[in-house]
Structure formats: structure tokens, C-alpha cells
Image (cartoon, each protein chain N blue to C red):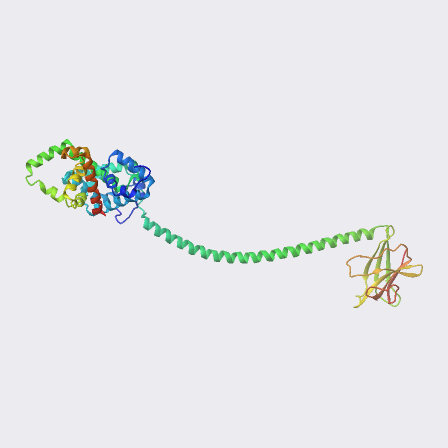
Length: 264
Length: 176
């Protein structure tokens, strides 16, 4: 046998049957094992003969005496491994068992999927709600902080000895109004605290005036500011007044005066 | 004894190597009959066949670690153990002596052989052509080498080899 092995002729030569029945010599056995490794069809032919022979000999068997069996097992007693109570371990039974277990697991898994998905959804909703609440609270907290900081700054400003405080009481013809101007004498910054002023009607807005040498100078419009409202800088003034003007203000006062206060 | 169980060969061998009593028991239940028939084909005596059968299973039990699955099926391995043990028994001095005694006392000595023709491998071989049957008888059942057969029959060894192989091909066609 060399490179070009005619496997069909080899299979038909009888050497395979000779090998299986234990009739082959050493050289034939060595050759067959080499070829078997190279040619699956030779391996298949060996297997086919072995299987057929086994089947035929099983059918052509003779009953073995129970006594022989007993003598055999008595003789080998002590060489057997301890065995756990015999479990059914046949391949087919085992596969059935595995298949049943797999189906059961699948069903349980599917049920758990539904259950956990619902749990997940409700948890997710709760989480989103909490997240929204958190942002709301954080926002409110931020706003409060800003407001507190502003108020603290305002307090600093109000208590600063270099800041003049001008209380403006109700102007003649009005009652119960009050506003306060804080005027930084160093920077000339003007702040207004509208203590008590009626809400401005629609289309109207309060305007602050500095009275300089008897003439009103525009000191800015009063917006709906919290705490102190930053107004225009005023370098010199003898008094301050607030009038109600049209929205956006006027170059010189036209509406009614609500409060008036003198500097000093 | 779980007779209904089916093991595939890998599992069978693995569990035999793990010294499983129940699997060895299964092996006996499943193969003792087939092996005993082939043993009877060779030793022809029921009592002796049972002794050989016991020896064969002891060998299987003790040598299972040396069984190489890549070289053939478990049954093939067991069958060869049974054949070799049977031929060894037939060639032993005690067997030869008992056979002589038997021949002296048992005038109808052919009965056993007649009956063992109908079981085991002889049942399959009986379908072969006469000239082939003779070669298989000498080579398989009596364990002669081809060289010994050539000398005994005064034919060239090449012829013995060719005819024996032809016989085995015919046997294969009977078997499958």
C-alpha cells in the first residue's frame, strides 16, 4: 500500500474481517491502523462489520447459567466500587429528564420575565417620578439660595454706614404708601425698596425720580423685583419721589406722585 | 438489576472503569449469552464453557483499562478475549486429558458438536462453502496460523491467505 490506496479494493479484500475476528497478523494490523487513520471509509467498514457481527452473535447466543453468574460475582466480590443507590442513568431517560427540566425552566423563566418586567416598569416609573421631584427640589433649593444670598447682600447694603437711607412717605393727597431709597454715597448706586405701594394697573408702571435742584431727574423704572430693586445711578439729589407713569416711563413726570422723601 | 437500561458504549466503558457493579452486571446480562455461544463453538463442553465464560468476564473486568476504543468496539474486544481463552482451554493439558476420557466413555461424542453448530459464530459459518468452512474452522475455531494451515494442508501459504480472505468476505455477506 502506498500513496494511491484503492480503499474500495482494500475494503473488499477481507482484511477488515480478518482484523475484527483476530485473524490478522502483526503486519496486517499495523497497516490497517495506519490506513484507518487516513481513510474514514475504512474505519466505517470496520465499524459496520463489527456492528453486524455483534448483532448476529447476540441473536445466536446461548443462555448463560445463573450459577456461572453467581460464581463470577462471588469471585469478584470486593473489587466493585461502592455505589450510590442505582439511579436511572440511561442516555434516553437522561435526555428526557433534561428535556423536561429545560421546558420547565423555560416556562418558569418566561413567567419570571413577565413578573420582573412589570416590576421593572413600576420601579422605573417610581424612579422617574423621584428624579423629577429631586430636580424640582434642587431647583427650588437653588432659587432659595440665590434669594437668601440676595437678601444677605441687601442686609449688608442696608446696614452699611456709607449708604444713605431715604424713607419716602405718602405724597400729599395719598395715604398709607411707603418706599425706601438706599443710596451708596461712594458708588452713587441707587436701590429702591417698594415697602407699600398699590399694585400698578395694567399699562402703568412706577417711576423713581431724583429731585436735583428742584428738577425731577429719571432714576429708573420699578420692575416686579424681589427685595431691593437696582435703579439708575444718581450723583447728587436733594429728594426722591415715585410717580405712576405709562409703561416704560416718561422723560418728565406726568402721573400722580405716590411717595416723596428728602435726603438727609 | 436494571435489565431495561440501555447504555451506549462510551458510558458503559467509563462506568466499568469506575468499577460499577451494576454496569458489570448489565454487561454480563447483555453479552454472556453471545460470548458463551462462541466459547461453546470452540470448547464444545457445557461445563468447561461455563468455566471459560467466568474466566472471560474476570479478564474483561480486570483488563477494561487496557481496552482501546479507537481499535474497535467493546464487543469485538470481548469476543477476542473469549476466543483466545477458549483456544487456550482446548490446548491445555487438562482439556486434552478430559477429552480422551470422554472419548473412551462417551460413544455418542458427536452430540455436543452437532448442537453447538446451531449457535454462535458456527451458525454463521455453516452458511459458507465447504472449502471456506474448513479454513475458518482451522484458523478461527482451532487458532492455527496461516503458516500452520499451509503445512497441514500442503498448500502454498499465499493460497491459504487468499482463500481465507475470500471466506471472510463471504462470511461478511452472511453477517450483514
